[in-house]
Length: 317
Ligand SMILES: Nc1ncnc2c1ncn2[C@@H]1O[C@H](COP(=O)(O)OP(=O)(O)OP(=O)(O)O)[C@@H](O)[C@H]1O
Image (cartoon, rainbow, N blue to C red):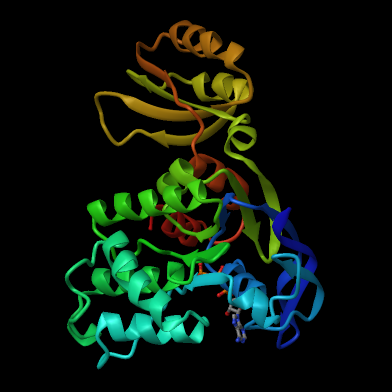
């Protein structure tokens, strides 16, 4: 069963479609990465999936029903990107409050709160007020709130933005543990290397539309980026290389050598790069095919029209 199904979902703000015919499916127990540049409509989509924003048109089904259904909502977890908590509450009070809102019994709350605090790395810190928490601790507290009521589907919007590298690994482990329990995770993140490690499937969105979606394996099948280092660039070499693939980057800053990045469609073209370089009279210092990664794919899909600086920022944030 799919835990999320949308058909031609649209949201129009002031005459502008910010989500524009978005169709996607997320399966039970799947970790799904939802990626796109700033302003692509990701948060608006998440809000529609949570029933917080009404679609202008299209269909949305979450856990087999409408996200406005209170029974569905009780089975959803959500960590928003901009988390703001009641600073006067302790973490335990905050979680008790959320547990009551989610319909947990008093005994469930008593058992569950220390468990989730432990899971997110806040064991022993539950009696401190949230006002005294660091940003990373607040994000951990928010994550504890999102998984408290044993949801079937958890939305995590940039869940590691405030965390140090250890915290990021811990969150990845939490996501993997959720998947092992059959809980689906809908992950919004600009940290593509993280997404790559944890997601089963990914959708790239731009201007409110899905550009491509698929498993990591399906998505990775495309281009082969190749790094090339040569002594210099004799006339004509770039033209020859451009016939083999797309020249993505040329760096001639260093007088000792020039660096190029070429995107090939076929592995069989790699030897032809060496022949082209040597035939031009340049020396070949390095020829390194890389496994296509999500960042490469992201830049390929969304980075070549629109604001390149913004896309770069999104990809490297
Ligand atoms: N309540 C609103 N009223 C008017 N415009 C809105 C509203 N909410 C979002 N938008 C606009 O919709 C577009 C998509 O915004 P959204 O927050 O969904 O993008 P995003 O993909 O989550 O971006 P980011 O990666 O920067 O968080 C933006 O241009 C934004 O200004």
